[in-house]
Length: 272
Image (cartoon, rainbow, N blue to C red):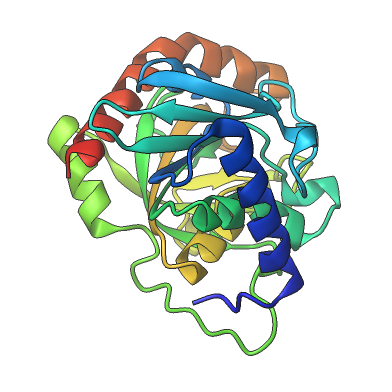
């Protein structure tokens, strides 16, 4: 568990207090980070009761990535629980430090959330997974050479991605494949040689987020469900060059379908 006296946790506590004051919700149950293509899910899971510009909450900044909103929202779920939607994700490649990357998840933990749902858009090294495919993350490989943990903090990542929550997702769609996600530092896309290396060490998916957030979530005692939208085949597995425009187009095309899927998964979790 986290040491509540560290500067990172103190800032998260401050942010959580502001969120409670601004939303009128003292306790949130689920934290939801929506990556490329997943934004529509926020409108399907319940009633949005508050939306706050991220820059008005301590430790948060404007989203630096096209396709990501810059707000923090509170949503009332049908069973009386509340979800905190983190629409202002900080990526490692923005150069703000690992504390900034982990701040959203740490803040969610301080609001009371016990479940972290992390989504992303990514490249695939599995040729059968076409753009638009959704893959459950079963494990990750952290290739950033960084960690959100500070000092002698030892966290077990054996089940970093909750088997229980993956079972819930499979109860909604039994055909969902599972795969290992590798986080590269970015912001450049990986070279074909780097992707081949990732494939050789076991990566089915490659991207620039999620792993560092998962480590912070597990440190906070949260259960993590990770879902990736395949937006393209990774370099060397793709027929042409890569671009962020391609990622946004694939996310836009798949958005309604994957948002509905995520809403159904959250509804199952909400009933537990």
